[in-house]
Image (cartoon, rainbow, N blue to C red; front, side, top):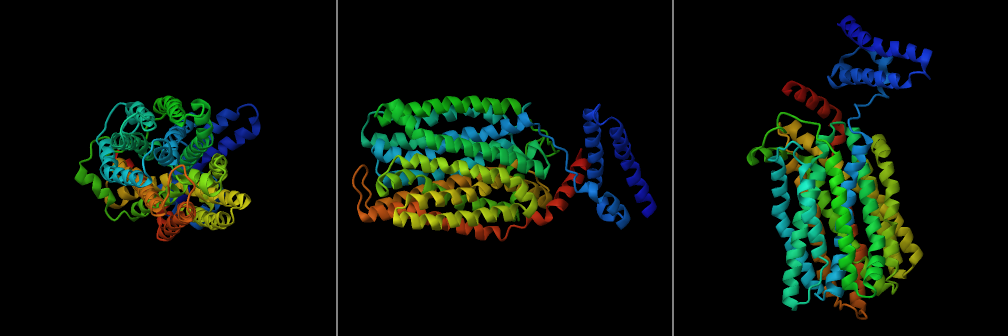
Length: 521
C-alpha cells in the first residue's frame, strides 16, 4: 500500500520537479510558461488533498510534500476584472441605500413634515412586507434559468426600477398630510422591495462565482471594501450636495442628489452584469428546485440560523445609530456640520476590511468576526463617555474604534452565509442558493426596520419636536439611540458567534462536496 501511494505521489510530483530544473536554466527567459505549468502542478497536489489521499499517506511522504502543500491553494477562478465588477455591485447598493438608511428619517421628519412616530411605524410595516419579499426573490432566483445564469440577470432587470424608486422616496410633492403619508408608504416600501431584487443576487451569486473558500473571502472583502467606500462617500457628500444643489432648499437638494446617485447606480449595475460569470454549476443548480425541496436546505442548518440572527440584530443596532447621527450633532452637540465628518470616518473601516482575509486565514472567520464585535462594543462604550461629556475628541476616537470593529464584521457576513449554502448541501443534499441567501436581505432589513421603529418610538417618548430646541428628555432619547441600543445588538451578536462551529469542519465539508459534484458531473 505504501509503495502504491509513494509511486502515485512521485508520478504526479515529477512534473513540478522537472519544471523547477527548467526554471533554474531559464528563469528570466520564460517566467510566464513557468507560472502556467506550476499552477497545473499545484492543482494536481491540491486534488490529492481534496480527494482525501493526504490523510492516508505515510509520514515520510507527507514530510516530503508538507513544505509545498502549505503554499498550495485552490485554483483562483475569478480574474481581477470580475472581482472588482462584483464588488462594485455593493458600492452601488450602498451608494443608494445608505442615503435612504442614514437620511430618510431626517428627511421625512424635518423636510417632508411627518412625525417621528408615523415614520417609525412606516419602517416597521415595511419590514412586515419584507417577511414575504425576501423569500419571494430567493425562490425566484432558484427558479430562474437563463443564458446569463440564475442570479446575474437580476442586475439587468431590476436596477432601473430600483433607481427610480430611490428618487421617488426623496421627492416632495405638494399635498395634504395624509397624502404625504400614503406617498411615503408607497415610495419606501417600493424601494425596499426593489432593493431586495438587486441586493439578494449579490449574495446568492457568490457560491456560483467560485467554490474556493479563500477566494470567497477575497471576493467578499473586495465587495465590502467597495461597499464601505460607497457608504462613506454618500455619508460625507450627501448634505454638502443637498446644500449646493438646493441653494438652501432642502427639498430640491435631496431630490437632485438622489437623482444623480440613481443614474450612477444604474451604470454600475450594468458593469456588474456584463463582467460577472456564474461558473460553478451543479446538477441541482441547472434545474428548478421545488419550494418544498429548497427549504430542506435550511433543515438543521445551524450556521445559517446563527448568521441570519446576527445579520438581524447587528443591523438593528447599526441602523438606530446611523439614522440619529444627524439628530445627535444637530441637537445634542449643536454642530450639525460635524455629522458628515463623523459619518465619513467609515473610511477607517476599510483598514479592517483589507486586513480581513489575512486575519480570517490566521484565526478563522468566526474569531475574526467576534473580534470585530468586541471592538464595536468597546467603541460604543467610549462613545457613551463622549456623548455624556460632549467631547468631540472622545467621540472621534470612539467612532474610529467602532468602525474598525464593524469593518471586520460586515466583510464576513456574506462569506459565512455562502458557507451555509455549502453546509445545507452537505448536510441535507440540497443546494438552494436563492432561498438560503434571501434571508440575508430579509433579516438585515428586518433589523433596520425594527431599529427604525425603535428609534421613532424612543424619540416620540422623549418628546422630540422637529426643528425646535429639544427638552432634556428628547436629548436623552437621541443619545440612547446613538449609543446604548447598538451595544445590545453587538453584544447579542457576539454571544451568538460562540455557537458558530463551521470553521472546524470546513475542509472536510469542501472535500465531500467536491467528490459529490465530480460524481454528479
